[in-house]
Length: 135
Image (cartoon, rainbow, N blue to C red):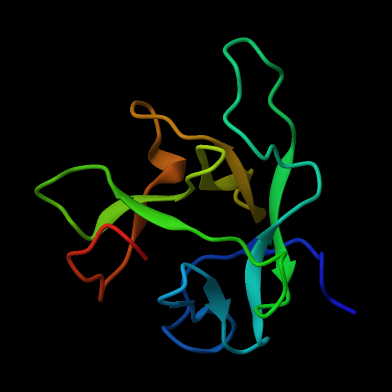
């Protein structure tokens, strides 16, 4: 069973296959090749972090799209003039999806508190993004 397995990342190859992502009207992020959605590892906070609180290691994991473990994501536009660039976040915990680079050898998708500055690893580009701020 792949539910709960960490989701990795790699440099872009093409727009289909294992790098294809669908944003559902429900707020789920679906990986069509696998049939799974993006969920959160069990150690992810359920509410916003308090100032000074230790940040847990929190990763994106495979989740059953029909189950309670599929996360609900929102799109936050980081730069108003560039609607296709923004942050993908879990609003209930104010955690953002970010790319963790391991010396350009492999990459992980993890979640960390959303930042408004120095947040390059939290910025994503969606080519076909509609003007709505909701996914």
